[in-house]
Length: 230
Length: 230
DNA sequence: GATCTTGGCTACTGATCATTAGCCAATGAC
DNA sequence: GTCATTGGCTAATGATCAGTAGCCAAGATC
Image 1 (tube, each protein chain N blue to C red):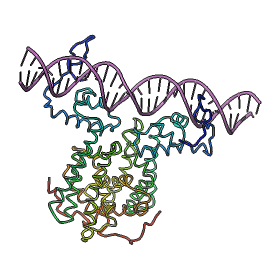
Image 2: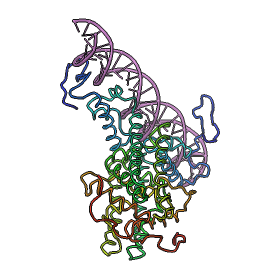
Image 3: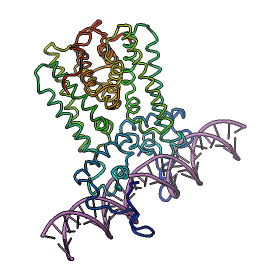
Image 4: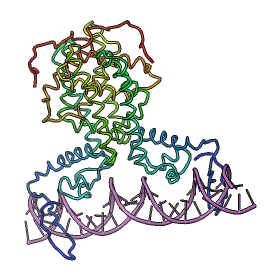
C-alpha cells in the first residue's frame, strides 16, 4: 500500500514496520494538519458517512486506529472543518466591509470575499454546506448560528442600501439569499485551472450582485479591465 | 409504534399481527408511493446514509425487511427520486420555453419554472443535489448527464440573448450558473408558510435573473402587481 | 372450500465501521 | 545506557445495517 519494507515476515507479529516516534521527514506538528487535509479531501469526494477512518489513515500513510493518536474522533474532524469554515467566512466579511462606508462598495467587497472564499477553499465550503446534517448537536447548532449570522450581514447591508436609495430590491431577504446561494454554487463547480481565475470570478460576481440589488445600470459599469484587488 | 393489537402474546411467534395481503385502507398501489414519499422525507432530513430501511419502514408502519416486497433496494429508491427530479425539471423547462420566441420572456419563464420546481418540490430538489455522490455508477452518470443538459439549456438561452443584443453578460456560463444556483438554494430555505408564496418567489427570481443578464433597466420593470401565471 | 398470491413478520447472515486495548520500536532526555 | 514518550501497529469489541430466508395469515380466485 505504501512502499515501506516488511520487517519480520512469516509468523512475525508485524507485516509492516512501525515507523514510530518521529517518522521520515514528517515534522510532527504537520501530521495533524495533514490528517485534517486528507479528511477534508475525502469528505468532499465521498461524503462524511462513506469515508472511513481507514481511508483517512491510508491517505496519510498510517492505519485507521493510529489516527486516534492525533484526533479525538471522526466527528471532531468534521466539526473542526465546519467551524473553521464559518469563522473564516465571517472574518473575511468583517475585513471586507471595514474599508469603506459606501454601501455599494461594501456590498461589492463582501461579495468578492464570499466568492473568493468559495473558490479558494472550495472543499471546505462544499463540505461545510453538504454535511451540516452530519454534525451532531452542540456543533450543528453552533454552525447554523454562525451561518445565519453571516446571512444577516448581507441582508442588513442590502436593507441599508435600500434605505439609502442606493439599491432597489423587492425583498432584501431574497436578494441576500440569491447572492449567497450563487457563491455556494461556486464551490461545486469551480476549478483553479478552468476558464476564470479567482479574481476574475470574484469581480464578475461582484457585478452580478450589484445588478441583483439594482445598483448598476444596464451594461458593465466600470472600466472593462480586470479586478482591482487581489 | 402503531396502534395495532398484539396477536399472540407470551412465547407466541409474533408480537404484532401480520396485517397482510391488503391491510386497512391502503389501496395497494399507493403503498409503493407512500414508501417513496417516506424515503424522500427521511433522505432529506437525515441524509441517505443515515437513513435505514427500518426508518423508512417505520414511517409507513411496517418493518424494514417488508419493504423488499415493494422496492428492489435502498439505492433504487434514491435513484428513482433523483431521476424523477431531473426528468421533471427538464420537462418543465421544455414546456416553459415553448410558448414564446422572445428570448427575455423565455428566460423569465425558464427561471420561473426552475424556481417553482425548487419551491414546490423542495425535498426532491434538495436530495437531488446533496446526494449525487451517494448514487452508484450507472445512475450517477445518468443524473449528471441530465444535469449538464439542463444547465446547457440556460447557457444557450443566455448566449442567444446576448447574440441578439437583448442581454449583456460577461460570461454566459457564469450567468447561467448563478441563476441555477440561486434556484438550488431556494430548496434549502423555502417553506410554504413563509413570507412568500411560490408564485411571488418565482416572479421575483424572474426579475433577478433578468437583472443578472442585464435585460432589465434599474428599478422594477412591469406593473408592481403579482405574477401573471400560476 | 381448496389453493394461490400478496404482503406482512422474525431470524439470520455477512459486512462494515468507529473506537478501544494493548503491544512495541525508535527517539530523545537524563 | 536507561527509561519515558511518542506514534506506529494488530486484534478485538460492539454496533449497526442491507438484504435474504422462510414462515404465515388474509383475501382473491376458481
